[in-house]
Amino acid sequence: MNFLGWELILVLAIVLLVFGGKRIKNIGSDLGGAIKGFKSSMKEAEKKEDIIEAQVEADDKATDKKS
Image (cartoon, rainbow, N blue to C red; front, side):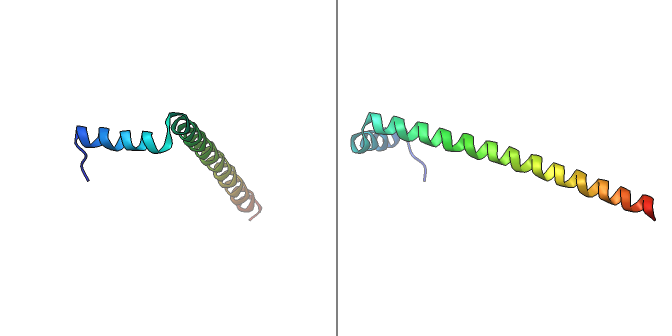
């Protein structure tokens, strides 16, 4: 669905009328906080995966030395 300039302005005006400026601002800040939280949790999960991989590699090396 391609919106032209005037169609986009019309949709934004209707959204502004329905929700109001203050509520749209709150929705935007909540959405931004959710995105930041998602990104930080993805980074934490990535770090945990790296730690697990390092532990598995260390265990494999220890097992190879015992053999």
